[in-house]
Image: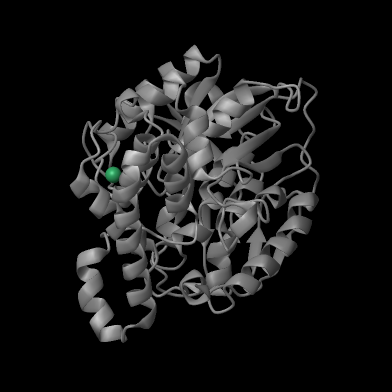
Length: 412
Ligand SMILES: [Zn+2]
């Protein structure tokens, strides 16, 4: 794979950082150009080094088994770390990812900025995003103030496809207001990177790539980025963004951190449950709604979040979610329960000590969830397929997942 010299062009009020991408493998169906767009006033701050393109495309080249040649400048620190990054992914998914060589004639450290350090966090409007923002903006004696100045909001990532223009524009306006009120600037970024991973790489392995690709490009101006994660230290598997891989995506002038592996989704939801910006703007849906609505309130992720808010008695405070949690929805919540993350136990524990009347409903939901889980493990494949047509959602993420390894399924 050749990553040609990146360049910046201006179009439609956006600064576009782009590079031509060439592969040796014929008929890959990959786009000829990888691009990231930023607001025009950021044009002077964007780097034309190859660092961001390499971090974005490494896993794609590894699925093709192609060495990478970078025609632009490349950070030695990034190269060093990506050697380790490759080892992690080939260990996790040996059939999907193959080790590759990275070459460049211009291995040069990224220039270090003389200005004060300032950091960004990636922001999607979900529980993990709000939790990270809440922690960074509300210092405690144990966790002093962090110089957070920007929030990076992305289209072209897993939850807002490039075709959802209206929804993206609406959310940019809405989140700009939210972040402005918190004293930070929203940086809307778009990319076509997902077209490079389509049907090759499981989405959970490709969550870092678009974020690091877009963020490293701002290296001269931004010291580093926080990537909120749902992966937990205590049950960590092959999942990105996370503490095993994210910190490796750095150069001499740019650091990457994953944030939030210390807290479960229940704890995070509890932490932001009284925070007005989260109450008015929370967006957790995996339903890919191309409409004015943030959340469908009925998909697995919406139900999971609503159940937590319901059990802590805060659901009606969240204006982007349906306020009443019905008995039928409790059964539906159980039907789609994914076990192994403690989501269900924490709701149960909280209800047991604070709101006993919810306990029978939650227990019934959990019973359904366990039944589904064990049927999934024990039944022959052909019966499973028939049953799970009815008890598994049409997960939009699966469009990125066909014909790729799913080690998490095997491990359970
Ligand atoms: Zn939903």
